Length: 312
Image 1 (spheres, helix red, strand yellow):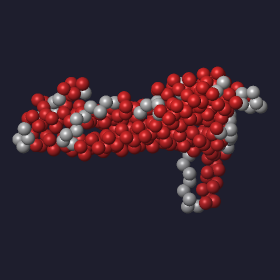
Image 2 (image 1 turned 45 degrees about the horizontal axis):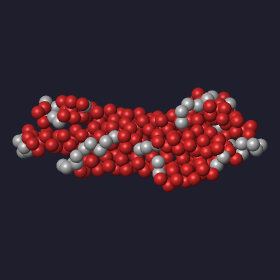
Image 3 (image 1 turned 90 degrees about the horizontal axis):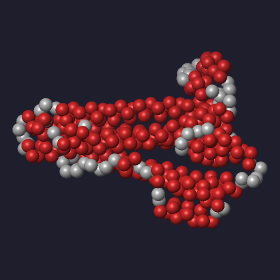
Image 4 (image 1 turned 60 degrees about the horizontal axis):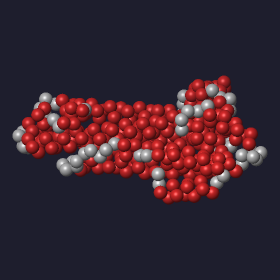
């Protein structure tokens, strides 16, 4: 946890009533779970021959750490402020609403409980709150998208270098000792890239799951079924060639779903985009694993295969 955040949180905890201080202590204990997924993946590649291939891997780590710091800072600040708000207004006229928030949050799982409670406190309007989920989902989608870009770039680079190395060996233009070192770097770089992509996907997936739980709970609050929202979201806007005909066509398609808020439709479409992006990321990770397997099992490279190949 960031030292400045920790000091600030501890100061607040010392000056608050006991129940609120306990709440803050719980929040602080949860900070240990905040950490960049990249920090769980060792920098295992000794970069000597292919720094250009490892550069996007470094960028992936850097981007992931920046994103995680931003998420953690927002979560701690939001959590502490939420705890303060709950303590200070607990006996006010909002007590009933706070109780309802707590009851609804209790029906959620894991991190969704705190997230849902904070969203309820920050945004009282149901439609505005439903719309706000799209922004958070979009942030996680962007995180996956950046990771896919870095991963694909690294994979393509290592693939090119492997092909070049294979051709050099066939032409007997490289020694066995150097060839083994180069192949070991390629295998290590690919494996590290794949592990980073999987870690980022896992964290982003958890975040999206939290947002989805909160979104579905709010749909229940406004009395809308998610399948109805999905049905409306699946309808593509008509072409703008004939405005009168387009308006009539759109009206016909949505007459039975007039109770679906447009904010929910936007969030639903954002969720669909996030799901598609996650699937793309998983395919990229699977492609990377296939590349490692192909490199390690290549019959022309057998005696050069590094120990890492046995764990591929």
